Structure formats: structure tokens, C-alpha cells
Length: 327
Ligand code: BYC
Image (cartoon, rainbow, N blue to C red; front, side, top):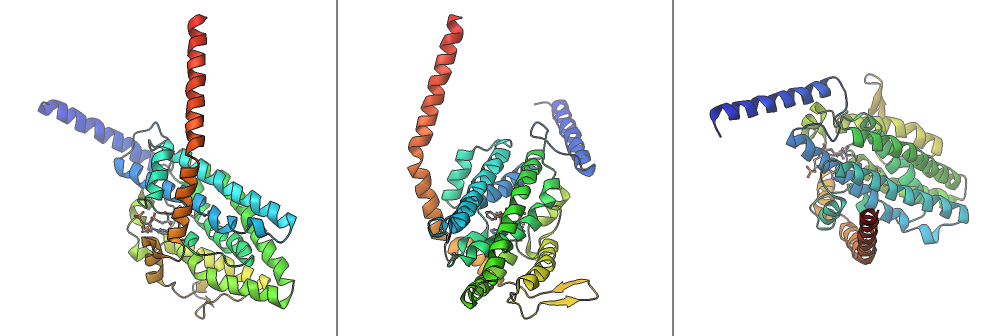
């Protein structure tokens, strides 16, 4: 390569980067056909894949209660919700495919432990009240985190998030309605709700990720318009939103430091146990091994479906090609 072609190459790359940066600065969308820096692509694949895996693994804790739902109505609602989560995973895997990474590759990375999924799904669901608490707090946290992602800079991710958020708000309301019904029930049912909220409150706060000062990715992701808010900002928003909902429900949030701060016009609150968070993220939470073993078994059990679908597609392709040839 001569010096002049390198300079031309450098000039072309600089022009592409300038175009990309101008799109980001104007809050326009980057689409899959557009040039993008390799770091931007990698960050998106990391975040979208982790998000997709969370939806798919997130089917397990609630799926655990489908066969033991207390009524036909509750069973139909729970089935629909878990099915929605499979759909969310698929929208997100598709968004990732537009970045050049196949769903097969992503699944392999999930089951080999090379990619993460949300810490929250490594906690067990011990009672039916957990179905309500997951809807209220876990989907509530997800909505806080995901509504701003509808404005993320990468087109396919933002469009997937719009559909997902609509369904998540139904999920949250079904959880809150279930808890409300239990709170109007017996003392035993009220105690079940409180016990469930006590277990899920802190893990729900951890969903927003480490504190900003310890978040290695936030600054760059915000500069690229992938994230629109910091982890701590969204956590604060979630606490402020949840306090009046807890009051209306009649449950106590298990944080002695939680109180309204008039000056900040926001709640002060305690910190989750960040050592526990790191342990869960590293694979040592209460259900990590079980979740991955279940996902791996489901993937292996489904091998024949993938083979049959590929064989069918190949045969259809052959038939179409031979019909075209005889035309
Ligand atoms: N769990 O620099 P940071 C759902 C990792 S699904 C595990 O702040 P980032 C739902 C992080 O990946 C909920 N890992 O990272 C489904 C990074 O590690 P790597 C999922 C976590 O990406 C079914 C490291 O810690 N939602 O809603 O800037 C039923 C440092 O963190 C967690 C999404 O995925 C965690 N909680 O910010 C019901 C939303 N937090 O990758 C509900 C999209 C952090 O460098 N994702 N880590 O090895 C995001 O908004 C961002 O990725 C996060 C983290 C805010 C989660």
C-alpha cells in the first residue's frame, strides 16, 4: 500500500466517523446499513444480547408457577406473560442479527457463560406472591430502564423497545393487581406479599447495574446515545415511583434509610449489597447454575426442531429452484 492510498483510506474513515458523529449529535438514528465504529457495534451486541438473554432466562422463574396457578384466570394471565417474554427475546435477537451476529452464536454464548443476563433472574420464586412481585417490581424496574431505550440511537433496538415497553406495562399492572387482590385477602396472604417484597426489593434495585462511579460502560454508552440515563438516575426514578405504590398496596419496603428528602425532591435510600450483586453476576447467585442448565437442556432438546426446519427450508429452496429452471 502506498502512502497516498493510506491517506485516502484515513480520509474516508474520518469522513465516515464524522457522518456517524453528526447523526448521533442530531439525535437521529443509526441504521444497520450505516457505517459505525467497531466499539459502537460491540457495545450494542453486548447490551442487546444481554437484554435478549434476560428475557429468555426470565421465563424460568415465573414459568415455575404455571402448573400451580391458583385459578384458570391466573394461569391464562401467567401463560400469556411468559409467552410475551419469549417474544421480547426474539425481537431483541433479531435486532442483534442486524449487527451481524446470529441467534445461534448468541445462544452458544449464553449457555457457555460467555455472555451475561440480568442478575434478577438468579433468585428463586418461592410463593405465588412472587409472580405479583416480579410483575410489580421487576417489570416496574424494567420499564424505568427501558422506556428511555425507546430513544436509543440504534434504530432496530429502539423500535424493538417500543413494542416491548407496551407489553411490559401490562405485565406490571397484572403484578400489581395480583398483589392488590392478595392484600385484600387473609392475614396469611398479606404476609406472603410482604415476605415476597422483602426478598425482591434489593435485587430489583440491583437491576439498574452498579453505581455510576463503578460503571465502566455508562460514559461511552451515553456519549453514543445507546443509554440515555445513568444507572443511578434510573434507580432513583424507580425508588420514587415505587414508594407511593407500596403505600397504596399497604406493604413496607425493607429499607430503614428510605425517606423523603425535601431539598432534593426525591427519596434518600440505602445501598444494595454490592458484594452480593458481584457474586450473582459472576455466576454464584442462588439459581445461576440451575437457570443455565435448564436453558442448555432446552436448547439440546430442540436440536431436532432446528434440523427439521433447516431440512424443510433446503427442500423448499430446491423445489423452487427446480420449478424456476423448468419454467
Ligand atoms: N445483571 O458498566 P455497566 C426484563 C454488568 S429483562 C447482570 O453499568 P451497562 C424482564 C454489565 O453488563 C432486564 N449484569 O453496564 C424480562 C457490565 O458487564 P459487561 C434486562 C449486569 O451495560 C423478563 C458490568 O456489569 N434489561 O426486564 O452500561 C421478565 C458493568 O455494568 C447488571 C436490560 O438488559 C445486572 N443487573 O449497564 C421481566 C436492559 N448490571 O457486559 C423483566 C438493557 C450491570 O461489561 N441494558 N451488569 O461484562 C441496560 O440498560 C444496561 O446494560 C444495564 C447495565 C443498565 C443493565
